[in-house]
Image 1: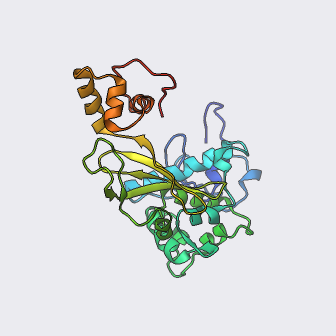
Image 2: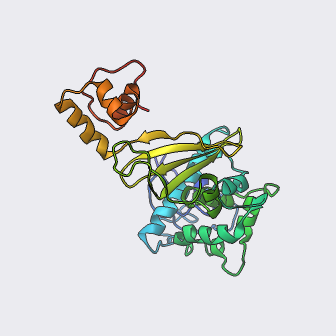
Image 3: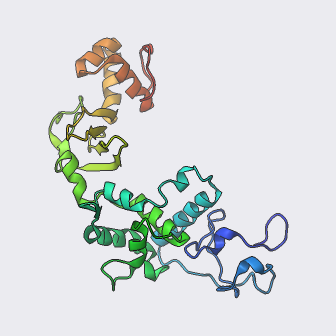
Length: 296
């Protein structure tokens, strides 16, 4: 690579086996004649880094191009981040991450449900990394090593694991925590309030105190978070967003000169909550801000 200094040089991120795209320039990497050699001890020259070298891999679809760029970006974040940054979080705890996403069985990981879900997510990069989707095995070696915390992780395994966690859907066991779908919608402005019409749940988290927390999204635009305590008790839902119905409600309340208190009482929430939810959704509020109001 030649940039700024006008001297050819190697970039360490380009040498990772699963990085086939430059995350900075968004271009596909070329395959030089030094592949398989230790580039740390080779000075970059026009001979071993020719400008007309063939591409290391030619993406077969837009989905593959997007996936390869995301993997390269993850690699850059890890290499440039500090040891305590989010990029390094849970690098050696993928087993627990898979379990809290719902792929758990007794005290371990349920590979029967995890493997096909992982194959579906990683299908976009199967042409680039055939070994990732080794369909000859019931349990791919790299995935088994990723889950086994006693096994030292290679860079390519960690990157694949982090990409997988970004896109892996919730597993089958997560339904047991908050009951089977559909779940209730608590939108105070919707005619289906209290009815089981919510079919989307994600961002399941296992908290330090043993509780589980998940977000729920209704087709009406309403979203909320709910926590299941270690004893199985479900705490009250906390509204994250009311959605499009809130805009119409606030505009109607303003046109009828309703006070913030009256409008909030009409839908059964606190005035500060109504105001804060409006701010969060970017609505120009027609009332004076009450004490403690802030985007929720």
